[in-house]
Amino acid sequence: MNELQNQDRELAINERAPAPVRLAPFVDVHQNQDGYLVLADLPGVTRSDIAIRLEDNELTVEATRPGRSLGGTEVPPKQYRRQFRVPEGIDATRVDARYESGVLRVTLPKAEAKKPRLIEVQ
Image 1: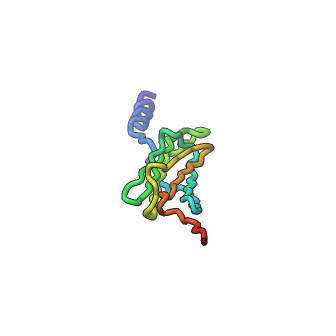
Image 2 (image 1 turned 30 degrees about the horizontal axis):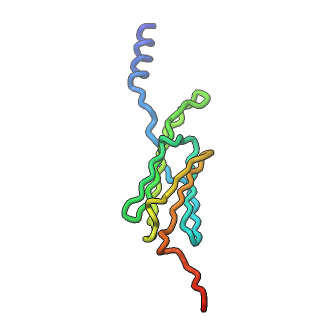
Image 3 (image 1 turned 180 degrees about the horizontal axis):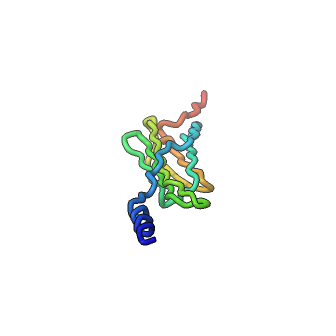
């Protein structure tokens, strides 16, 4: 019996947490005259687990969902990552991000100088 208990202890010690699964989240990108809207599906993630970076006309979205146990089965952690080339003319000071019900919403407004302008004919 002691031998069986020792084997159980060895198995528990040698067990590793499951490796994270790397995923590219599903994304929709919309454009209008005011700018761009990026919608990314990030289920099971909390706001604090999301990182968004806009640098050198590249938008990077990263998020981590911790692993969990579901009905006795371990679900590995998930790491989401997606990058986009962003056209020049985005007003980086007005970029806005909101997360609700598993969907990240990033608004990338165009700089005023890049917006289309209606010219009145005299």
